[in-house]
Image (cartoon, rainbow, N blue to C red; front, side):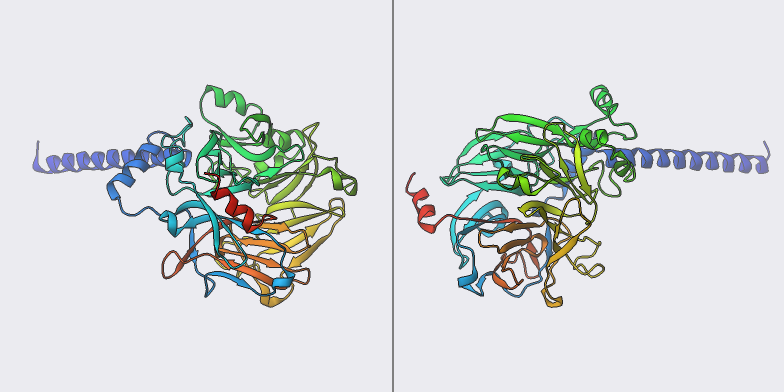
Length: 447
């Protein structure tokens, strides 16, 4: 072979090698994208290995740039405040910045607290789906909560399980269901919580997915789950099936399996609450115990007929809203996040508390009442109507809970302690309870 032919052959071999390596790279990249997006094996193993290799301090769920120049409580008008104590779910220095629950008085004094480290409650994940083991870490968070008068507290460790803990911090029972977000008590004393079951790319998942044409696995099948005070599952309603059966599948299809970043979380249900019978007559479209549901991804709230499991009314007049409540007079109170992709709400003017009337095209902003009262949280958020007509608002990413009167004046506020010199941890729920400090003190005497 001549030298020229030899050089040509070597160049051809090199070109073939480059093309081969390029093809392998494209194949690996494609496989990596599928594994990463769908959390297939070995994604959980790789994540765990990364944590072991890189080490370092664990990060809490969400930190945000601090917005307020103080920490603790400020009373602006004691006479205008609704009485009671305030339950807070968040991250606390006394628990080494692990998740926990704190009960405070109006001065911000801690009356009681409950440590709720997911890694201690569930050292090993009780789940076997493709994201098993990713939520039972000490960095996971508490979302919904409910305080019993005897000092027991019911809370969900997001996407891991439901837990009832007594005043001494002992686990009374735990339910290994992927519950998340709100906990709402009904008139029978039972609780409604959102829960998730993953529809995966396996024979069982594909059979389930046949009910939802147009979707691809893995995808969340969100449920309204009714649970007794003793931890027994009483009822499960597939929200995904309710929407499909009610003619609203088009909204789900438009999201292309949840949209960028949602990775199959196509509904992201963040609140489920029943209509109280005492005010049911004020809502001509609904019946007592019908469920109002909030879907963050759909930017929609809707009411489900508890008997037929179909949608009676749906509104998409919000942007990634939270916590719709029946407040009487035919109105629904909503925490409209107006999420706009920014950290401070600069593009859409911040979050709003609004009321809407099902059946009528009305939307009235309750708060802010002036341009100087702006607040914003891109995720999370809660609003509670108090017995005296005031509103207690949780600005989750601001680490702030504040109470306003009917005129929109701030009468009380509390801001979380800084995590470092720049950031504040989120506070996902602030809830006022008509319990006295003396009642709380009695819990500790019943050791």
